[in-house]
Amino acid sequence: METIIISLLLAFVLSGISQVMKDLGESPINRPGWAMRPTVGGAFMVAISWFSRPFIDAFYSNGQLGRAIASGLLGVLTQLSVLTIFFWGAITLTGNYIDSTILQVIVVGAILVFGAPIILPIASILIIPITLIVAFPIDFVFPLKESKEAKEVVWCKNCKHHKKSKKFEDTISGLWRSEEMPDEELLPCEIACEAADTWSDYFETTPSNRSLYPKDCEYFERK
Image 1 (cartoon, rainbow, N blue to C red):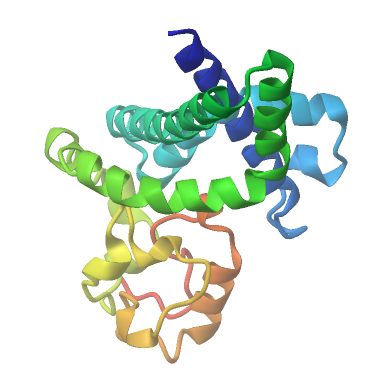
Image 2: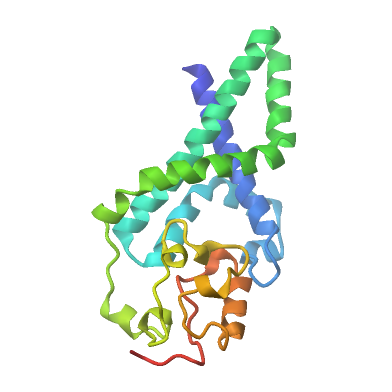
C-alpha cells in the first residue's frame, strides 16, 4: 500500500512538471500569461493545479458542463493511473535489486528527473487507446447538444460549404486536435483550397486553444 501511495504522489508530481514544460514550450503567441514572464511561484502554482486543465479544455471545446466534467475526470484518472503503474513498477524493481532505501530513492528520483522526456511520450501513447475505449460511453451519457447560440456561430457547422468529416470532427481524437494541418480532403470544408489562409491560421493555434472549427471565415455563407 505504501508503494502505491508513493507511486501516486510521484505520478502527480510528474504530471505537474509535464504541464509546466508544455506551457513553457508553447510558441510566444499561444503561451499562457504566466509563461510569458515565468517565475518559480507561477510554475509551482501551475504544477500543483495541472489536474484542472483537462476540465477547462473539455469545457472550452464543447461548452457542456456535464460532458466536460466526465471527460476531464477521465483524462486525469487515466494519466494518473498509467504513471502510477509505471512508478510502482520502477520502485518494485529497484527494491528487488537494491537493499539500501537511500539508493532506491536516488534511483527513482533519477528516473523522475531524467526519465521525464522519455516517460511522458510513452505514457501519452499508452493513454490514447485507453482513453478512446473508456471515453466511448461518454457520447451516450453526455451527447453533444447544439444550443441556439451554437447555431448562430460563424463557423463551419453553420456554413453551406460544410461537409461531414468524421476523422476531423471526432471530439475525442479528431484531426482538429492535430499539430499539423491534414490533407484538404479531410477538412470539413468543400472550399478548403479557397479558404487555405483560414485553415492555416487555425492550425497555427495550439490544440488546447482551438474550437472545433475555425471561426469568422471570410468565405462563410450561412445555410
